[in-house]
Length: 485
Ligand code: SF4
Ligand code: SF4
Image (cartoon, rainbow, N blue to C red; front, top):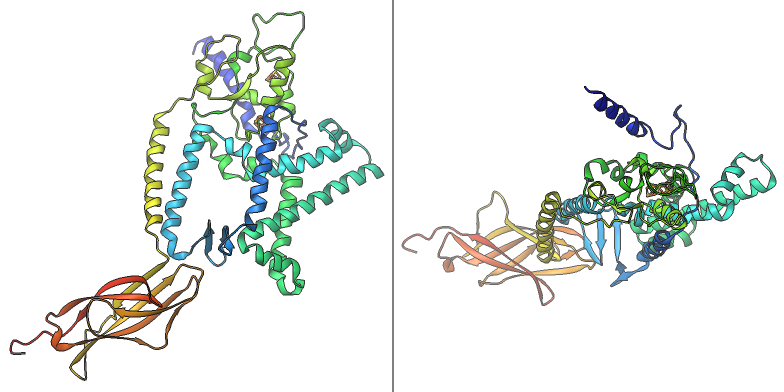
């Protein structure tokens, strides 16, 4: 190995050592609390607007009803799901599977193209932490510097008051979030009952609210960015989902290096645009230095873009030293000293994912269009052929299974559609419960001398009053006619 290669290797190893350790963990394994500086700038303003809209949608959705039923409901306990007013149950398992696979492929494609844009702009964890809890913390304890000072200060009345007020407000918001969360599972009507009825009538519901409140309070007051860096599977999958053409929040090292402290009387020759001010590091809520390259901890919150743009404005250099860009676009760009726009390149991987996603979505749409409110199965009872009956009649016994996917109770009657004969339901009248599944038996009686074949096709209509809700075909077995009959 020549000297130059060895030197490069040593440099590369040194540059990558930051990946050996989480930015929020000390050398001896203790938690390093992050005090990010208050973010400000055009991206932050845009994120406030997007976050406010998403929060309104999140809180408002459980109150929206379609025909008296929730717009969205994820009742895992009863395996009942409502999406845009349509009920899905265990009988729609195939739709769930195709839908989930489509969602996974969509996430892979979206991440391959746009990186972790979801984390920064739409993830509830980031929105609640950065736009609600952190804002309250800034309001009560001040900016990062003041928060550090308060932490180091002795316990005075003022410190106790600030800390206690903050924690009470945090718990109140966590309690509110847990109520909203529960309303997506049990519906807003059930939640209102839990709130208004005597507590003894809803011990289960109250226990769930208490547990959720505790979890949310812990996550937002203490666990914070570790939910993204340690727990979130999406974050941990970035290494395989991203490639060098994905658009991420990136530091333009071609333009920024070699970094050097800024001195007013010095020119810009033989140096990069990064002035080592550390503002991008100070604002980072996950405590990383984006100049080290893409990192698992980066939640694409855009705070470092705003911070660096602000510095660039001050030193009269073009904005965008940190920006949305792909690594390839940065590496391939010529060093020009000006802000370079990244071009979106469609890669073969993205084309492949797009084709797969189109196929999956097409199948899903076809299945949805062919989905009916009822499913009916009619089978001749196993082990029985036919029964000879008085008055020259022959009967067959059938098993009927009816699935009602609607919210309504539906009494049904059965009729023979294509042949004269009798149809008798065994037992009581059939009534389909809302979202229910019912089994019944019925007999079909036909005149023996009118049957010319051993197996005769018959159609059975299932009616609600006069309304035909489904027609099914089956066969009727009869004894073979003797030649002289
Ligand atoms: S904010 Fe910009 S100039 Fe300052 S250290 Fe970060 S990248 Fe360099
Ligand atoms: S590196 Fe920048 S975008 Fe990523 S989390 Fe830190 S401040 Fe946000």
